[in-house]
Amino acid sequence: MDRFDAMQAFARVVETGSFTKAAETLHMSKTSVTQLVQQLEARLRVKLLNRTTRKVNVTADGAVFYERVVRLLADMDDAETSLSSAAVLPRGRLRVDVPSPLARMILMPALPAFHARYPDIQIDMGVSDRIVDIIGENVDCVVRGGELIDQSLMARRVGDLQLGVFAAPSYLARLGTPLHPRELEDSEHRVIGFLWARTGRALPYAMRSATEQLQITGRYVLAVDDGNAYLAAGLAGMGVFWLPDYMSKAHEERGELVRLFRGWRLDSMPLYVAFPPNRHISFKVRVFIDWIAELMAQHAPIVAPDKR
Image (cartoon, rainbow, N blue to C red):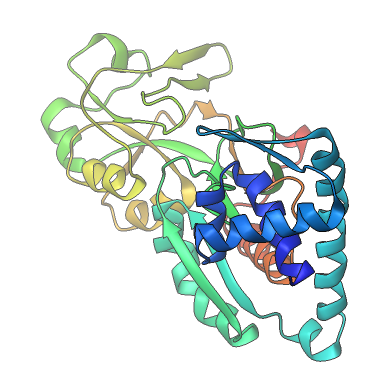
């Protein structure tokens, strides 16, 4: 039995709650993972996991051992990356998931520079606005906008997205320019709904002026759950919609979008990189998160609290 492989297999079973999922993320057979854990239990003479036909639970002894295993695996990874060559050039496969507009407009154009800096990192990038099971899908980190709902995750705030309200000239020519946000609630105007993955429905936007504060939802004939589709619908004149500045800037400069309600402000949307708890953050993940933070400092810097 390779004790390193056995501890890694045990840790992944605890994290995923399943021998099958652990095997998939480790690119091993379920039989091999099962045998490694059984051999580890035999060597320790302790039952680490309680298995039923439906789920796997860690025992009290297993939970204590898991915490020590995680630290040991982290120390081993640090020992490898402490070598000068490894420290200069982090390597390995990196699995991340990012929102589609952020990938298209910011990350992809900047990736050649990242690859030139870290040529030995292989990135598997999921591009979506869906909720990702970070542990179950063995994803190293995800980039998401909005306050994090899953408080079990670790996260680093890397930016603040400044929002505006926009419409295409074709929409305004057809229905006129709304002068007050409340017109989106009680007139012929329509918004484009964005279906947030965590709720499955469109959420209201908080808007405030010097004298008023409103929650605007509006009525829609189209709602989507993808950022690129949301932008395309707005450019096509399907309705009024809310965008972060990085998505709207070029289109506004070209006259393809018109900013509305200039006397009103919206709260900025925090942007986070989230990663699994109780798992060592490897060097390749750390440099990727630092790179995201560098990029967002250029495109959507964090706003100091007293400036909000």
